[in-house]
Length: 254
Image 1 (spheres, helix red, strand yellow):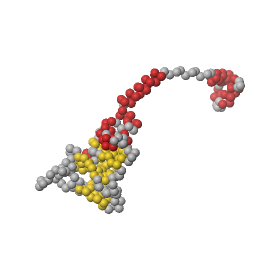
Image 2 (cartoon, rainbow, N blue to C red):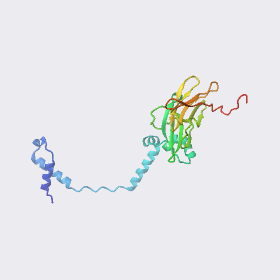
Image 3 (spheres, one colour):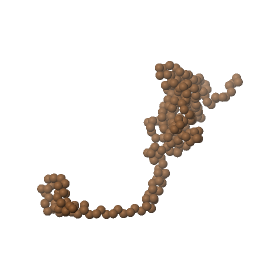
Image 4 (cartoon, rainbow, N blue to C red):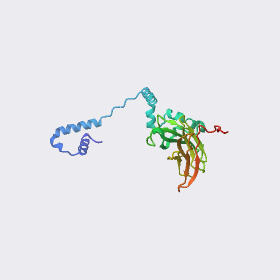
């Protein structure tokens, strides 16, 4: 068994050499080392038993705090707030719950009207069903948190790919000011542009095998035209875009 003297020698050897020894009397140094041995040899006090009731109370308090500060927790933990996911609840109803709205992510964006950006949110099921939702929101990085202010502009859910034919399928919505937000199947096209009646050309944004774009419908001018291009710059498709508010309205001579 190691004696106190042996322990003293060990401690002395482990102690680094320092110039302070010249100013520290040997008797004082020996007394300090003995106190150190006594302190390390003493049995550590037994840890007091925690009250289980106290732990339960703390857990309940933490849970309440998460609920109260839901907005900040959602941003930190990646959860989307209900104010954002509720308008997208049609994803779950259209897919029988296969697409989880909480997995929605912003996948593309382009300039929108009045200082906003047109963003595309999407989510997928394990079986390959894809849901999309274009919306207008304040600008920022693509991976920024979900917006607190936004205008949803429709959306859809579809199984599998959108087909090989550019503009083979289209969808869209219109708001009260006549702003149309639409999407069209990309097919083999790598890019598409919107040609407006005033000569302006605006690029469509591509995401989830679709092109997304917006325009202000006006009955007094020719409709805008959407044009799709291959990687070589060859025109693959052209489509005059509708005014959804007058679509299906009988013509004056009809």
